[in-house]
Amino acid sequence: MHDYLGSALELIPHNTAVDTLGVLNHQCGADYVKTQQRLPPSLVNVLQPGQRACSFDGDADRLMYYYLDERGQFHMLDGDKIAALVANFIVELVKGAGLEGKLQVGVVQTAYANGSSTKYLAEVSRSYYYPLQI
Image 1 (cartoon, rainbow, N blue to C red):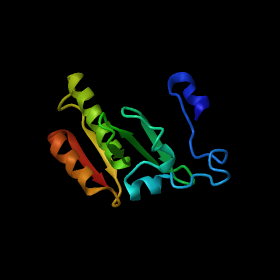
Image 2: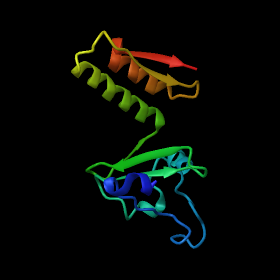
Image 3: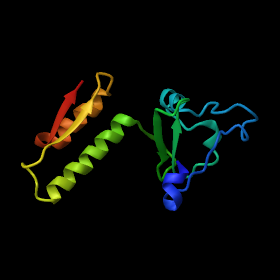
């Protein structure tokens, strides 16, 4: 990933085999963060308020993105929430470009999508968001 990002985003790996004496990704993967709803133990004394981090699952096809707010409170953004935020950003760009009513924004969700993300999109975007569930 670093080859593609270059200096645009500093990547600091934690829970590598070197860090954990051979236990790669122990208590830090996407599933751990999602089910425990907290920082991986290896980041408790590392991540500072305002900093962001993410955890991959074992085969790197799932990502959990999280951060600490100014009070040090943990917040997790899962894929559904990230999709909702990106969709709203695109809707705002459409409005700003004067294309309101001329361009529709759609989000494709599977049946496994978080129902609250679908509700959020429908309420916030009203006439601009068209849920497509497969």
